[in-house]
Length: 240
Image (cartoon, rainbow, N blue to C red):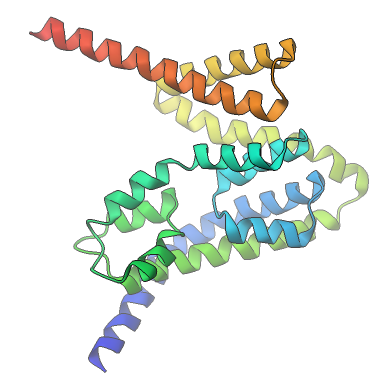
């Protein structure tokens, strides 16, 4: 009985801690749903993507690829590359969460995003299963439901306005990129180099739109990391 009460208390605490995430997700998911409608997705496809993927940046990237006519494999592979950091987040949290069955852990691990990770990682002490489900549950529900609401709003707009809203997709990417660029010059160099590579691939018709984005991202990331590694080695040699 006491164990059940404790789990319910932890779950409520998780919901309270995740409430700010849910509120923050609301406008972003609304925008995603609206853009999904203007990209050509159905309500079912929009909600299903939020249910299965649950990753804002990746879902916006998918809309861009869908609009460009990219194939399913390119979209899935790009989503994998963009979300590969989640492996590190999960590995980090595995040391902080309480012992639990792997199946149970995998359920709330699905809901790990940048925001839910931050809440759980900064919590004092260990993270209980109930707390993890509370944080993830309210965040997930907010994202999925708001995506559907956004689609409904998009469906009510005039056709001309729906078509013009595709421009907002690029504005959203800029909005996601600029804050990171302000914090790190490394991100600035990465964005510029990726843009250059993508332009070269597109103008030369070497690759399709989807593969051009994926290849440009990976290639620029490898080059930037190589340069950064060489800089660190040089500083280490000079310090010696």
